[in-house]
Length: 91
Image (cartoon, rainbow, N blue to C red):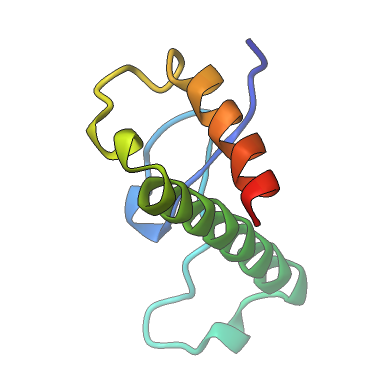
């Protein structure tokens, strides 16, 4: 298995190694107080997470059986990959 970073939202501060979260803005300041590179990183993390969240929601709605799966995420990978392929053909 590849050691890919996991993207999370700002609520997961201190989650540990491998968890990528957006950088919080300084208290009492606007988002513009962050460096332009940091703002861009935050935007990219939000965008990629939104794509993943949307894909998961679409799969769960189209393939209702995925709503009831209780397997661990590592074991459901083949089922999810098959659903993604079928989802692409379905559209």
